[in-house]
Length: 355
Image (tube, rainbow, N blue to C red; front, side):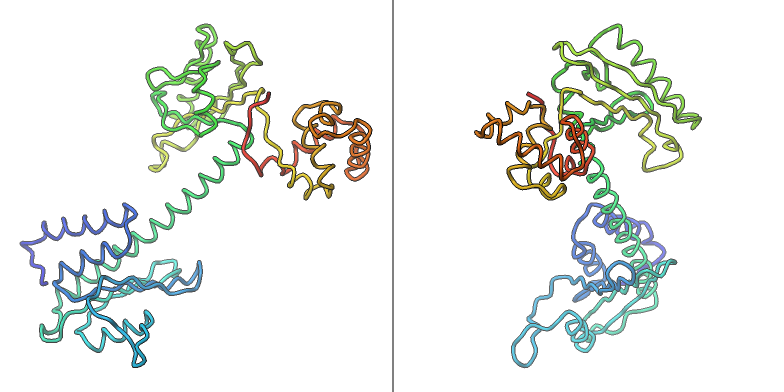
């Protein structure tokens, strides 16, 4: 299809549809199908040579209404399919290489040979489209990597039973981690009112809101990262929640984080990380029986209670404990608890509520 100056608006709408399909996480076949239709073509193909991440070449095709097989009847490989289309059809292509030279993108558009060659306008549009596709793919990759990192960090914080709530520049909740959501559901020390975070004690809430406002001001001024710690009373009577209020620096100048001003970290001292016995065994070179004893002692049980829960005698439990001490180079039960909880063991399982 030839584009003329009078169709610039139409072309702009078309380009927006291509960009939207890329940003919405749809398969590459979707924007390619839009391109095929726009050119009234037989097929469209995007070839991505990934020079940095994997060194592999990826092919994305629109739906093709014919079987492309070799002489033995087997389906052609992707490169062979591209070569077949180049021979059978009238091809047009454009290539884009990012400035960092990490990849090479080539857009191919094919039409029946009876329809003639693509004109210069079509070739120019093809160059615009391949650069748009490349930028969309690169952005999607970066967004995907960022999301993976976010999930990993959130998962670690959840395993440590530290809840995180992000507030915007007006103090409203932007997002919260799973651990924070679980804590807030109990309305025990902290609660959500009008999409804002508040302490359940009116007196403590005044100090809490002062801390949040101070952090918001620091974030707005990009003036520092001074944190404020507070202890919030739980209505249940159990130990207080520990809360840290911290400004998020640089958020005002970062478009991706512009809506994030304050981070509120929440720790419930009544929540203990679950310790997985198999990981204890692997990390400290223990037998399964020794790991079971260490796991229960770390959970807060006495040696006698640990023996009862494992249905072994106290003397057997004591023998296991001596062996654990010998292998780990410690001499006291409190040292064992500290050793395990400060190790990587707690990263292998989700948190649990202490009994």
